[in-house]
Length: 245
Image 1 (cartoon, rainbow, N blue to C red):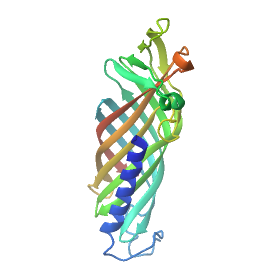
Image 2 (cartoon, one colour; image 1 turned 45 degrees about the vertical axis):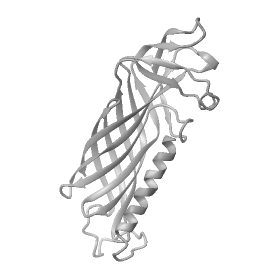
Image 3 (tube, rainbow, N blue to C red; image 1 turned 180 degrees about the horizontal axis):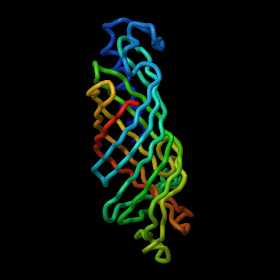
Image 4 (cartoon, rainbow, N blue to C red; image 1 turned 90 degrees about the vertical axis):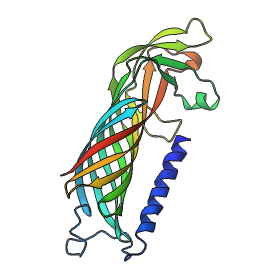
């Protein structure tokens, strides 16, 4: 469901960007050369930015990223795909429920929960970005982590099971491998964002939006059905500051 929602919002944003620019000249997504009339736009062509974000909602998150975009003309606006490296952290509250993360077990409705207090997971991930200029200085954007590694604290979680020998406290640690596979098969710590941004100047921008952060722990022991991975999906609002390098 979350995966379908991500794609639905992404396509809505894409067509909205096209529609708002449809009254202007058509550039058919050609890169803007240095000598063209639109080359003055600092977000056309290859550009780089650093970003610091803070989220709050179902727990709190903090992230710093280095991003590389290539702005191309689409109708009268700028569409910018890109790649980046994001370092992100999730800080959970008391008794956060982490549920079975194995895709096959989820599909067959064989799930259990691991309640963890003081969860703290971190990630270093390669991320994909797409943003589009809707109005001058105003953008809508989407980004999602692709692959990387995770680390964090170790915790004892309260495991819920009908098997008395497994129920109770179980040691667990932050999962170390992160991979976007699409919905239930996802692994590890992954962040994604939908946002609006406003450029205060050619170099500085503010962003705000919605973040979906997946945090995952691996138990030291295999539990029911051989599973040892447990996931919590946090939904948060966030704000961020962007600086164009």
